[in-house]
Image (cartoon, rainbow, N blue to C red):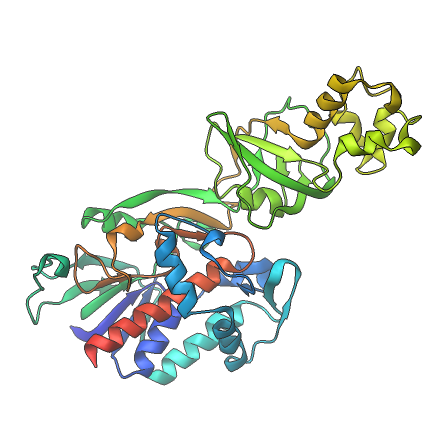
Length: 414
């Protein structure tokens, strides 16, 4: 049996960064992953280039059960820390719209170079090995209740055929999004069995599917900027902190950044509400004298694709002149353009999702991401109930949470 200070399950960005930092500070570390190479899912991020972080980092850019804890982690690990990591790894980057930081070389290089740094720091890799037979120390009462686990009691697991024991265990196994690369929720289920509150996973950052007969069917390929909201139990809200983003019509429904972000909040039964002219109030356009003689559909076609204008415009108004519309008709047209409502039939699922919301709830953990039920057990990365919006927030969270766990381990073990 091989014994370590720390065993980490999951060699994504959270696990790699946690392992590197802990090993650099003198801890013996085992890193276990079912893939033969680290960062299998990371290589797909940002279209293969990696969307690593964002200039704007607040708890409002995350869906979680404990925004205050997320805020604290982000304050201790700002955007500049990720930029310094990229510089250290020799990975050039650029800033794009909405403050997004993208790599200029394949995202897989981040995993490869972090793995090299882990190796240089003395981390033992167990790759191509599924972690199994995981057991916690026999005494695992919470420090929160004034008791500590007995000294000498260890976590144990099998990494393939090798038996490993460790004073501390870190679960950085990710979420079940992208099952094609082997992603699953096995470790989240283990956490639930060990007494943690676990939010069921659901696909997010994912296109929405519409019924085949929905009013805007047949517009695939059209893209424009919109403001997207949700109506839940009759109440309308606009959750995206950035407000306006591009939407894309697909043959199955809608996609694009506006929809991917909104999917982080959407649940079955919620209506999708779209404002197709978020910066141009229709009522004001109708009031302009130069538009008075235009047909209503022609007016809309000046500010959006003609096929969309035709589909949005109420049939009895389309061929009337703008100056002819009374107050009720103007309001009806404005409602159609600024509050178009539809009921999605679902999402394109985990196979197409860039992330999955859900996981181990922060209410089950301390501020250092240690379990309140099993002392010495930590969580970091996507396995936690912390899901970032589109824009580099999820990789940033992986690195930030991995750094926090490594720091806490170092304090107690050195």
